[in-house]
Image (cartoon, rainbow, N blue to C red; front, side, top):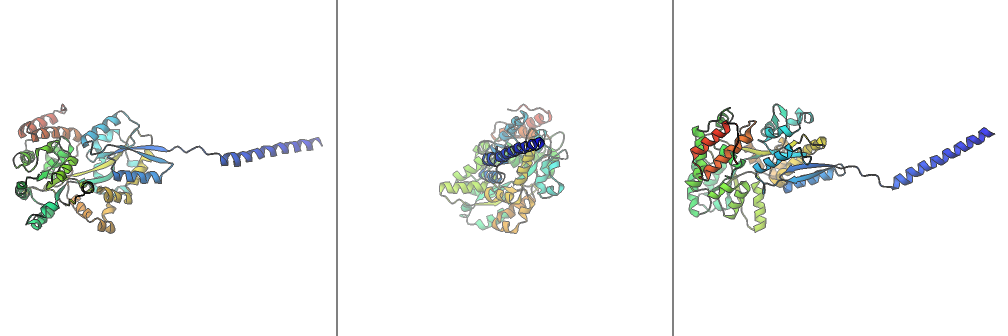
Length: 439
């Protein structure tokens, strides 16, 4: 009898305990808020255009509650490519945790590899085959995949179609532009147009990377390789002297280019062309977006055309590739999430948005193979054709150091502060001494 009472007492307390467990589970846990899941904040450094922000918003919506991309904006309108380069380098050198993913000019991959995550474990060979070779080849350093393609650029000659249409031989001029006008033909046309008093040709000539892109477009791939991929750089070669002399003549002898360009980057050239009704500007695909904005703000109807950059008849020079790759900071605490974001940006629909919204040339092959998309944006076919015939800047591990020296002395020459020969001599000496003392 005593054992029976003990058993009943045990079952009673077990039942009571079970009741409280069930009560706690159904009432306390069910109706009390669960602790919020930690959201990973991913810091992304780039020129955050309206198009970039659309993509960021799309990603943040898709991964709400898991990952939030926080944009860190270094806009082209406020920072030149050189200034962006130095800001990034200082931040990465200090091991900042406020950088996870960052964009680099395609020629910077080698320089920034020292602070970046090698991406080979994250991207298969099949993935690599999805991208244009012109973009993918810039992502490697020492046979390691150090960057991922985002978008490409290619040098273009833009012209005010609405102004040229007023010329009696407009159709003949347009045919030559479409086929690719020689510099000899361009200079003859420029002499005619200069009588209007309007600026004929604008190119970025400030002390920055954009000037070097214009300079390299006056050389052939073989000339670039022979001079700038050598261990010791010889800047006294006739073709190097002639290229710098040509840019100088455009400003000071032919007077087709106003001297104010020595203080301009690309954006400032675009603005000057639009505000002063200039005829031509050397630029990148993004200029089309600037024209749309200008027309909306001013209620004007500026119409532009696009053509390959001019060439010398005796040379097979080509337009220079630009564009931006993505890298992951070695100090990032969220490397997997960073890779997830990069792969998202490389999806076909997001690559299409880069062009349809911002006129950035996709790095993904599939976009150029989409006949429906090409029908909506026929100009993309022209850009793709030009991409097949472009050339890279010299890919050397110390490219940014060499480029900084060249642009500094070339800029001085274009401002008439030193002569052409003197500028080349000082640049050559500085480069080959393996030290940098420019300010």
